[in-house]
Image (cartoon, rainbow over all chains, first blue to last red; front, side, top):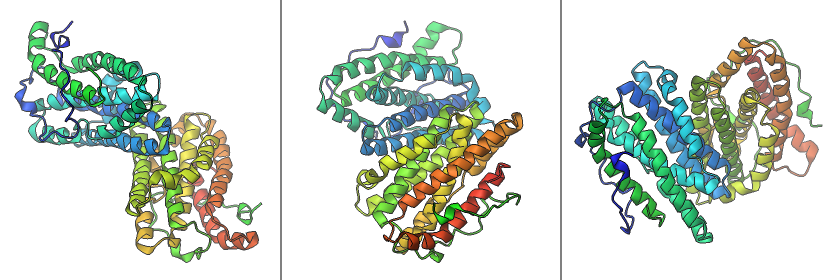
Length: 239
Length: 239
């Protein structure tokens, strides 16, 4: 088990969280130049990940119980699609075929999508919120290894939790209507963290020295898990 | 059977069609002020129709056989979603709840979506191309009954066939790879025209005098069917 799984228990802090970052994460404070994927690999997997989030959200749009939630989620789906298209545009600027850049990551991200899809509409929303937030956050934090101007554009583009309030609102309404769903969704949310961490870990190129890599990545994962806890808090869940 | 079903047979004209309109349709040359739906009804049904097109396209994105087609169709889905969100923004400007405006049209458009979804990925693409093109074209042609500034914004927003080349390319590749699919898809394309006309006809408020309404709408449907034939031509199909 990696060091970053043994996170400190964080509780109770009321969530003054989402959409309230004053500044974009300082990706450069992590020194990951030798661990982060190269530019094309980075863009390829972010592009495919955002497309997968979009697909999951589209399904949630179709399964929405009300027109208002359908409308709201379609905006969230549009945000994921805009992230995907923004990254694809960066690949095209580099004269890289987006499909070729995404290809190496398609199988593992498809598997991740299946693993985390959830058994019903509410679980799907929890999944998109928790894993989408975590991985956008992760990709944003390792962006420092990209060329500087590109890094800055990508960081703006994939800002995590931009539309999270819409999802939180839907989940909160469902929990208010039937408080019994809360514990099931909280459990599911906790389970998702492991899947999200594994996908992130696979995105790291690795130096060949596992202990060294763990030590280098630990500050990143500590921050990611803290942000995850704030996402759980926003739903009234213990992380 | 309505007059506009008995269209003239049009054939053979090679398709110099899509994305090549020099000018936006002159909606004002149809005098439909007493037949077109009122502003909120118009916007509500266009918004819901574009959301339905988006949902169908999202499914096609998920079912895409290659990453390149997935990527291409995601752009088409994004265009449908942008149309939806653009119309929703117009409803909000009018202080109308988009969900309430869409509600009266949800059942008939959901039924239409089911009827026209097609039995496989290729039929779904034909459907989106043919029915989406037809109905965008229809909504654009009756826009003249809206307040002038709004009409002009809506007309830009719902321009038909903006991303059709992507779909045509996918279908053409499939037909080239297996020419036997062409006749099945052509048949399906012809069937779709009837469904699209019915949905359009239901969007007309009607004066109560059916013969009068038919006569008034005939020029619109003549133009719509001509555009439909050009869409079919672009695939090498006889309309």
